[in-house]
Amino acid sequence: MYTLYDNLDSGNGYKIRLLLAQLQQPYHRVELDILRGATRTPQFLAKNPNGRIPTLEFEDGQCLAESNAILCYLAEGSAFGAAVPRMASGSATTLAIRIMLKKCLENNMKMWALDPPNTLRMPTSFVLLSAE
Ligand SMILES: N[C@@H](CCC(=O)N[C@@H](CS)C(=O)NCC(=O)O)C(=O)O
Image 1: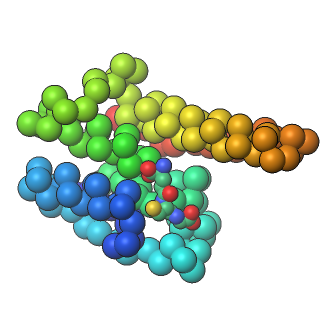
Image 2: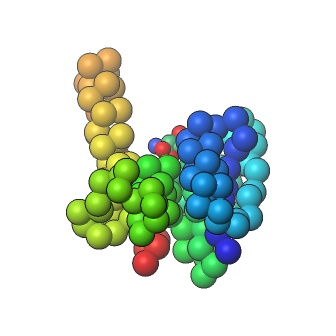
């Protein structure tokens, strides 16, 4: 069974809960207090080095981050699969990394405008475990 690390106030978490409900997919939900740093503990960072929910954990302990990558992963092969783009890479993990890197790039571009010397704050050790 999947474990979803989540927060009830999170729209990104809600997207996953909604799809899991539509798929009638049972899962275990773990509520994390994101305002008190529950996603920044060593234990959680071992699951998602980006320190954010939603994070989907598989039975074997591997994890997938990034809500849109999780949606694509869950939707694939279901009736909702037609509504999402096919994963060109064939890998939910690659998609999660691409989404995360795009976000980093956008953030760096914003920071460049504000603070050029401190640009390029890319995470150096972003590792997502394979979901396959
Ligand atoms: N791009 C990510 C964004 C995830 C995100 O920003 N999650 C927030 C809650 S909506 C979070 O975990 N914040 C806690 C933190 O940054 O410590 C996704 O779509 O999954």
